[in-house]
Amino acid sequence: MNYRMLGRTGLRVSEIGLGAEWLERHSRSEVVEIVRYCGEQGINILDCWMPGPEIRSALGEAIRGDRSRWIIQGHLGSTWQGGQYVRSRDMAKVREAFSDLLDRFDTDYIDLGMIHFVDEIGEFHRIMEGEFYGYAASLKQEGTIRHIGMSTHNPQVAKAAAESGRIEMLLFSVNPAFDMLPASEDMNDYFKDEYYRNAGGITPERAELYRVCEQNGVGITVMKGYAGGRLLDARTSPFGTALTPVQCIHYALTRPAVASILTGFDSKEHVDAAMAYETASEEEKDYATVLANAPAHAYSGECTYCGHCAPCPAGIDIAMVNKLYDLASMHGDVPPTLREHYRALSANGDDCIGCGSCEKRCPFGVHIVERMASARRIFQ
Image (cartoon, rainbow, N blue to C red; front, side, top):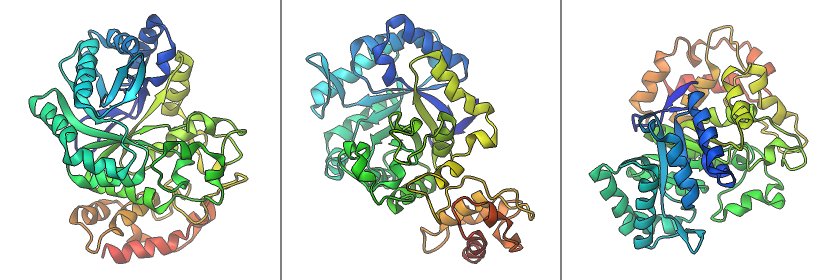
């Protein structure tokens, strides 16, 4: 298992994590078995937004005696009322539900206290300016949560959070289908077939979000990496062709600022399918060729940092230079840290010999030689 730093939190998280939602349909013993199997594979981050008492107790039992090795994302505002899930901003109910989470996990702290499911920009501002954020801040001050995060499907909300200076990490939906779509305050839009008509390529607001997070040290953990399973079946994929779990995982992990993709597991076999990423070949990880040859919505002209451009005869890590260039392009003056990172590369855009061999291999027809020249100018 590979581990990555989650932004500036100081936490090292497994690049494949456990999104526990699917475990709600399983018995207590099955939950314990799957979670412990995840731990044996090196998975160390677990997201629990589910408020159901039984699943919380089962997850708590699964990590009992091994709490210190698990990084837990626990949500503020996910409540259990009248036998069902309710997203709530009622502070009495929010406090009660979070206390219940601590009790059922038999712990006195949660690593990542997530402000739960904020998809409207108006609500984001109300939360940040009101009692809700104040409650999260008080939990952090007393050590009950170690870091304050937020979960959202809306890139506009995510960007506002990343720029606020008060949200340390994000749980955000990342996959090549969602990345084509404009922001919406209704997450159901992302699952409507008609929403994909005329879509193509990464929307500017999502590309900018990833760069803002990278620049500000706001780490991302990924939800819905398979788009609810739609991407794994050609009949439901908006591309008209299926991707594998390994390809979906690789796409998410190549986005700037992404530290971990939290996948849902129904069985040990599902865990194994995700863990196959750790030993997969470059060919098995290759989502780019699939997207470029798909019947619909190819990412023409856009760098997705897929790495097909390698090897470069001048030794340039072209994908990394492109990431640094995209980050630098956000600023009037290039931040010194980005300039130093660029200069510290063993080879960079300054070393491009203009041979164009990379462009012949690029699935998306990116004008790489031009981008290397642009990087040379912006970092001079």
